[in-house]
Length: 125
Image (cartoon, rainbow, N blue to C red; front, side, top):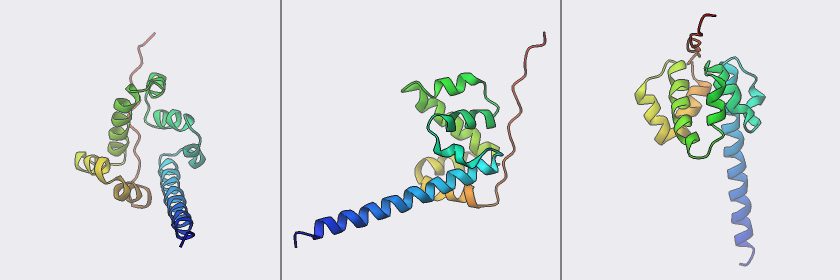
């Protein structure tokens, strides 16, 4: 009877690790669809840099992702920009906010293709 807690803990750990590996694979696949190295999704902070570059955002967006609180708002905007770049609309974005466990694999393993946003216009010298 005293070992049942340990068994439940081990099962929970195995399920957690399986879900973690699955969503890392989803992120990897999404980065590859974006024309970026898949392994970049595994590197903290660098993954934000790669995402901002893929979305043609200025380096300031990456810096803003490092500021607590501000990163929540910037993350939502980058999420919206990513969804748009994959040809999805506002409904898919809202669904991702609430049901990401369904929509993220759809984006990763579905037929959606990435079309990078236009680069921001630079001032002529």
